Image (cartoon, rainbow, N blue to C red; front, side, top):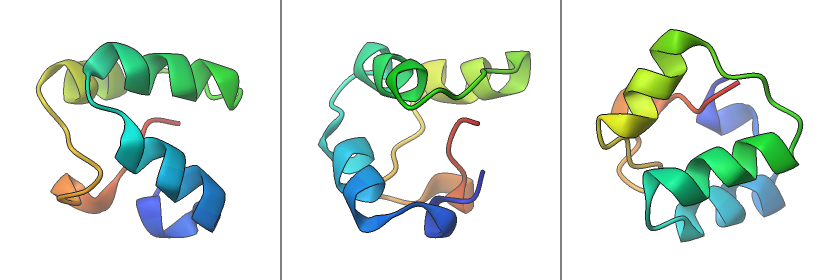
Length: 58
């Protein structure tokens, strides 16, 4: 999912995540299924505040 497609509330929650574990928990809370590539992206240090690849787990 593209970060720009998220609601303002979802963006704020994602930007507040400080660890990959927090991002994974948020994704699960929001009902997103995580592909292997998306898990790798989160574990690799993806940062929504920096907009790396402008994507978020889906």
